[in-house]
Image (cartoon, rainbow, N blue to C red; front, side, top):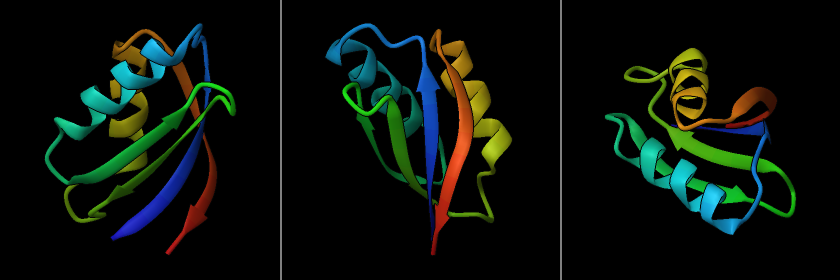
Length: 74
């Protein structure tokens, strides 16, 4: 499992953060997603064999927001 933070732009409220979490957690390979409207970021824990940064960023984009990798944790 890998944990990464992604900077998010375009969120307007906590409901936006909840939408991102729900959309990410529906993906195979995502263990958890914790999005903070206040910090404008999401922390995602995922299986690197099943998921990658680009798929996460694409999912966030389809949700209506933009994302960039911010930092990596192991």
